[in-house]
Length: 200
Image (cartoon, rainbow, N blue to C red):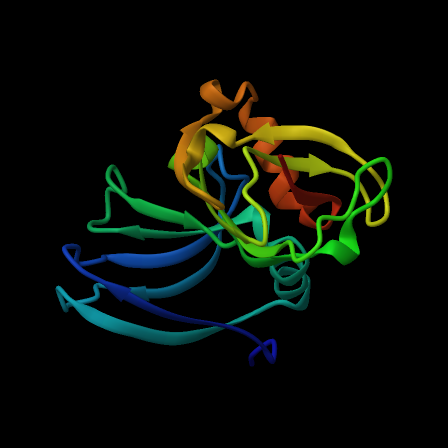
C-alpha cells in the first residue's frame, strides 16, 4: 500500500550520471538522513529526470512547511564520497520594492521602485545579490530583519555589490558580510521576517 502523499521532482543534470537521487533533511551547512528516494542506477549522462515517490504524511508536511531544512542530493556512485547538492529553499526571487512598504523614520522617495533577488551558495557561506532600483540611485543596500510595518535591524550590508546607478549585482562571502552561517539559516527559515531597504 502507499501513503497517498507524493513528492515529485523534475531535474536536469549535465556532466554527472547519478547513481541515486534523494531528498535529505538538514540545514544548509549540515548533512542529514535520507527522507525521499527517487531512483537508483540512472543511466543517462544528460537528461531530464521526472519521478514521484510516495511518503508518509508527516514527511510530506515537513517538506512543505520547512523547505529550508531539506536538500536534494545526487551521487554518481554507491559510495557517496562525491555528491552535488542543493537546498530546497536557497533563494528569494522577484521581491518587489516600492514606497508602500516604507516605515518611519524613513521617508518615501517619489517614483522609487524595483525588485530584488538573493541567492545562497556554497552551503550558506556565500550570498549573491541581484537588485534593480528605478526612480532614484541608492548607494546603500541592506537586508534587514523586522516584521511588516516595523523598522528592523540590518543583517546584511550588500552595498559593495553596486555596479551601476540603481544596480547591485554580485556575491559576498559571509566573512565579508560579517555574519555566520547561523544568520543565513535564520533567513532561510524565517524569510517573511526580512526585507530589503535601499538608501541614498
